[in-house]
Length: 363
Image (tube, rainbow, N blue to C red; front, side, top):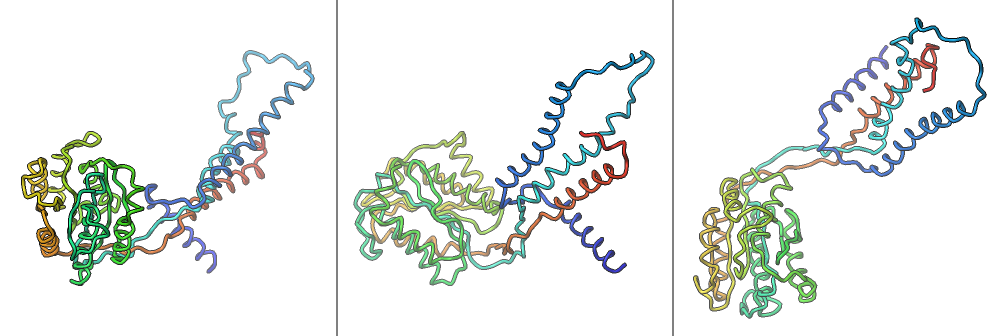
């Protein structure tokens, strides 16, 4: 009785875990093969049924005694197909088990000093204007390369301060792209900035319009994708020349985005880069300054190297606090429950077929 009791316990645990699974948590490693297998398993009995129907049509007709009107079919006659129905019901469960479903289990959640920072780099065509910042050592004295060098300096400041930040990089023009998702590997973030700061890489960036609001939306989407939109310690830093007055994107207004950032406690700091362009010299300063301040962040008009470095340093000093970080285990197989359901349905169908002649009708 020992092995049987152990088996029943294992089956009970597998079914309990299966009932607790959420479909949105599952990832299927063999989905294509499972779909093909399911189609084949369902097609075989249907093809046999079709072939049987054709044989009946081709069979010679026999004279049978007339069926009296008082003789009615049994209401329970459809039950003879129960074995076939159970077999068909087991096919989707078997296909799902064959698809190798996996679920990522959370090991735990810890709190650590640092911030979760999304850095947005403006790569639009207007960033080609000159900007000298020799201490930052940009690839060229252009606003874009200076913005990349400033972002790298900011990352270095965070590393030197022993902050355990989670950082991501977004590059935008009139489209926005996640270059580096959130990561604690700061060297990888620096490498990503170096790569997008290569002249050949920027030349291949062929969306040279400016839509800052799209970059902000992409930043919020990045927080949402990592399920940390409601977490504490989030912030954005935008490096841009601010030459854009677009206030809507895909039906969402800039006001809505800033209100969401404020509600979610995501301050948005904007470093507006423009050589010799003080606050108010860029027409859109009057738009972006109150907007980013509404989110809880600050607006910096970097008109030379000194103001740019001071802006980076100021943001670094303001970026204090703690963040919650989830630690994940490897993907855990979740096929057992589906396999057990398929096995139970098919064993029941086989038992009905083999022990009760009434259920031997096919289909």
